Image (cartoon, rainbow, N blue to C red; front, side, top):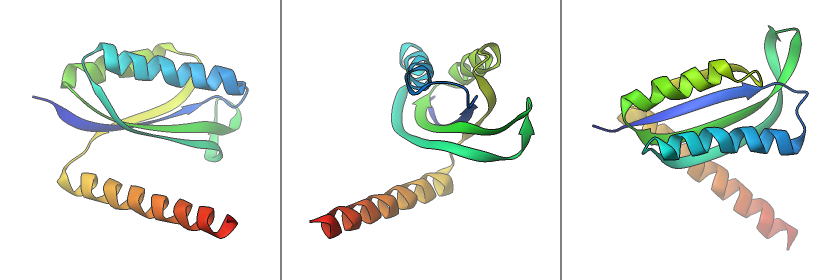
Length: 121
């Protein structure tokens, strides 16, 4: 039985843009090789942390929404723990309300981007 999951991880702020992309690709590939499907992905960029983690006050946030078997989540979180570039992570199962909220949020962001693009013309 497959479930929908949402995982957010924070990467250390000392990484270059290429290193950040490489790390994100590593986790997406891990999901795909574990017979999961990446449904949505968002790069939230550099953000200030609510409290210092490992003496760092900011980090690169990234969200991946995916569908997989529950066993894959354990493997993914083990990789998060092993990777020194990841300073925090959280993976949650998405229920029907969470899925509806995520869809509304994406639609709202898309409408906002379209409005900005049309105003530039």
